[in-house]
Amino acid sequence: MLDRYALRALAVCSILLLTPALAPAQTARTPIRPDAVVSFTDLKDGAVIPPKLTLRFSASNFEVVPAAVAKANSGHHHLLIDSPVPPLGEPIPSDPGHLHFGRGQTEAELVLAPGPHTLQLLLGDHDHVPHNPPIMSAVIHVTVSDKATAPGRTASLPDSEVYFIGLSNGSVVPQNLTVRFGLRNMGVAPAGVVKAGTGHHHLIIDRPTPALGEPIASDPNHLHFGRGETEKKITLTPGRHTLQLVLGDQDHIPHDPPVMSRRIEVRVVRPHRQRRW
Image (cartoon, rainbow, N blue to C red; front, side):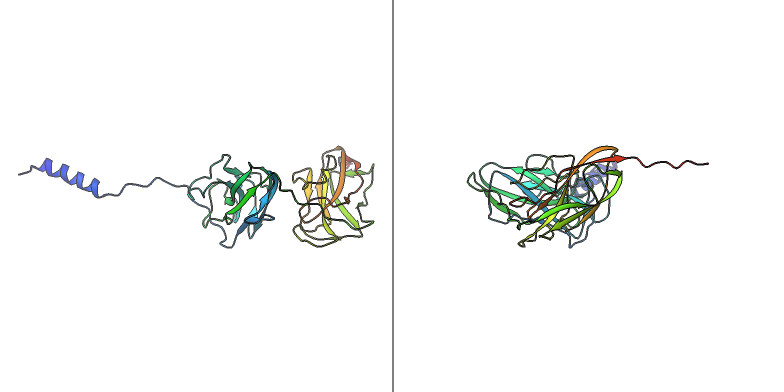
C-alpha cells in the first residue's frame, strides 16, 4: 500500500501529464479595417519582366506610415520574394526574401535573376507584425527575361509646356511657400490613368533632370503628385535651391518628347523678425 508521500508524488505527476504544454507567446497583432487592400499597381500574374524593374504598391482604406509609428488603421509594406507567408503572430523577417519598406515607401527598384519568381505584398504594423486580419496581396508569378523590356515612353502632344506659376529663375522666396504648376496643351490625370494627352506633375528639388526612359524616383528630392495635384506647400532650408517640373505618364515615366520646365534657382530667406518698441 502506498504511503502518503508516494500518493502525493503520484498526484503531482498526473497533473503534469494532463496539463497541455504552454504555447510560445506571440506578439499581439494590431487590428485594421478588414477592407484594407494592398496590391501591385502595374504588375500582373504571369508577367514577363526585365531583370531590373520598379515595382509600385497600391494601398486602399488605410494609411501608409513609417515603421515604429503606432497609428490606428495604418502600416507599411513588405515584399515577399520567392517566400511563403511568414507566421502571422511574429515580426516579418528581414532578409533578401523579405524586403521591408519601413520609411513608408510605395515603390521599390528590384533586381531579380532570370527565371521564374513569386512576389507578394504583406502589410506590417509598427512592429513589423502582420495585422489582424492580415492584409496581403495575391501571390503573383513572374518570369524574368533579359529580352523583356521596361514600359516604353508615352507620346506627348505638340507644343505642350509645363511651367511654374509666379516663380522664376532668381526668385527670392520664404522657407514655407506654395509652388503652383501650370500646363499648356496637355491635361492632368492621376497616376495609373491611361489617357492620351495627359500626365501628372513631379517636382525635382536640388537634383538634375531625371533619366528620361525610366520611372521618376520617389524621395524627398523627387516629389510625385499622383492624385493630379497642381500645387504643393513645401519647406526649404535657407540658401539657394533648384526646382524643376517634369510631367510623367501613367507609369511615372517622362513623355516622348519630355514635357519639363526650365530648371530654375531660387534663394530662400528666413522670415524677418519684427522689432518690438
